[in-house]
Amino acid sequence: MKRGFLLLLGAVMSLCLSGCIFKPVDDLYALPILPQEYRDLQNAIDDTMRELGAEYATINYGSSTSTIQLLDLDGDGEQETAAVFLRVTSAEEKPMRVCLFRQGADQTYRQSAMLSGDGTAINSVAYEDLTGDGSRELIVSWQHSAGVHMLAAYNFTGSGANELMSTTYNEGYITVDLDQDGCWELVVFQQDTTGEGYNVAEYYDYQNGVLALSSTGALSDGLKDVVRAESGLLADKRLGVYVTLELENGYVTDVLTLDQMGLINVTRDMESGVSLATSWTNTEATTTDINGDGVLEIPRPQLLTAPDPEDAGSQYLIYWQQIDSNGKSATSGITYHSFTDGWYLTLPNGWDINNITVVRDDGLSGRGERAVVFYYWPDREEEPKRFLTIYRLTGSNRTARSKQPGRMVLYSDSATIYCASLDVKVWDCGLDEAGLMQRFKPITAAWSSR
Image: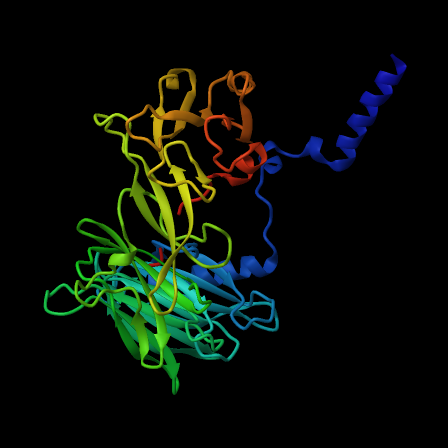
């Protein structure tokens, strides 16, 4: 009893010494006090907003969407610059603003540059070294309307900003060091809306103090939308830009690279005007380095024959194609993707599309169990033989169900268990339990640059 009293007394004295017991409730819930330099920055921003009659602007796309961004533009490891994105509510022309505040030797932020742009919003921003001087430039896409944007690039001096380039575009853009000279370039995608020309990719490179249009490459005909663009290695280790386009009847991936003449599309078929060798439908997959060798692959789904002709659930294997700088393709791997259940399986060599078939089994989905069943079916005159089943378990009894005889756990998280049953007596499919676990992967991320 005495020991408990002493503990209680010690707790009360600690509260008294800390002063907490005498503080008003509101003080106990006060937000942390920002360092003085950030309070000074906020005051400078507030002064600018009052002077302009401005409000914070939204940034629609990209990895940099905050209205206030602290930046290290000169690469010294210190975030000495703050970029602030505003809209002047009373301005009829060029209402959008990008204000740069730079921190001086006294740690105080002062406005060092202000950029003005037309439009209704800022579509995206990026920061890259476009000039090769070691400092990053600002790339801004000003949104004029839903389908028209103005892309501009600026570098900064101690007393302002210089415009390196500006162009209108209607699809997207990507920053990339395609010539691998240490300076980043811009590749801008344009859809022909007149019906009299080509869809093109424009290549802007830094020359003589400006970012100049250096060359263009044709994109596939029939372009409806550029849905994705990314840089990556080609099969012969040259750098390329993979541009996934939506067409009327599916998707194609145009592969762009540089040769002595400039930007070229190495996959576009001259006769059809479309990258036929990289066209695809019927999958949610898109370009990715599926086998982890550093080279991007393009999906090419192939339809499997269904055991039941009336089964509406079509199943596909994905043949992953690597492209070299001459446009030649080669298959680097084959997968089965279950986007419904959130996993994929890399298939061993020897799995022929003519020897297997796949069927979904959702008969126990009400109990939290869904399954994908693989059958060996070399002779279409005979019944297919079940040799592999992969289960997705989500019910409250999922742990118990994963331990049923013949099942092995492949992967689990807080809400789902993936397990499988494998019958090697039906077919020597090149898998054992260890190999199956190694080849099974959850789909963990969304597979655009605007």
